[in-house]
Length: 210
Image (tube, rainbow, N blue to C red; front, side, top):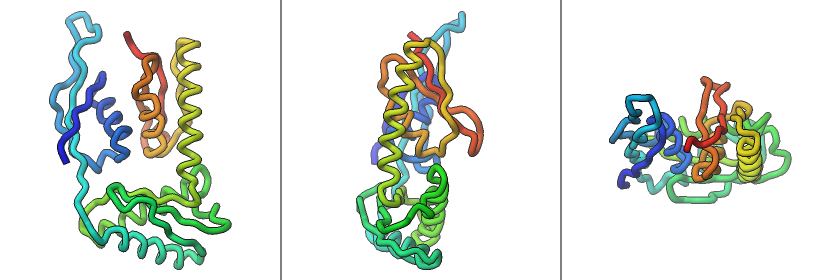
């Protein structure tokens, strides 16, 4: 896949923008810094940073079958009855677990689901000897959560615009932060960036500098 060029105020913001646009985490694409951000001698806004990103997506014709087997095995070990359905057999792969009373697989704010997806990715890496972008959902939770976050991001953007000050959202996992970044990526009035470390990392929505 050819590299994609992305500009932003800083290299870090350009990388976060790339995560949002590609729907991938930082370790799933290579980054080449074409140009670092520059300011004029007075410290005013100058030239934006420019990076070129290339997704690392090794092909694997049997990946869907392997992932399905992994999830079926995990469900069996957990004693949970569910059916694994393939939503997309193209990169990035997407699967959804259907069934009744699957809340235990989602957990508080989707934390259990995030762990399930992470474990599945680790096992998949061991089987394929390569990293493969993958999304695991349970009963459509991610889709509902994505819609909710998109509405919230748009609402908060209007609040930032009208009140003229930034708003910091609650801590969220990387995939949910990407939803917010992507939702507001082309907003003419506000921009976003992430602050904090680990589980405390959160999105800040602030006025776009003119």
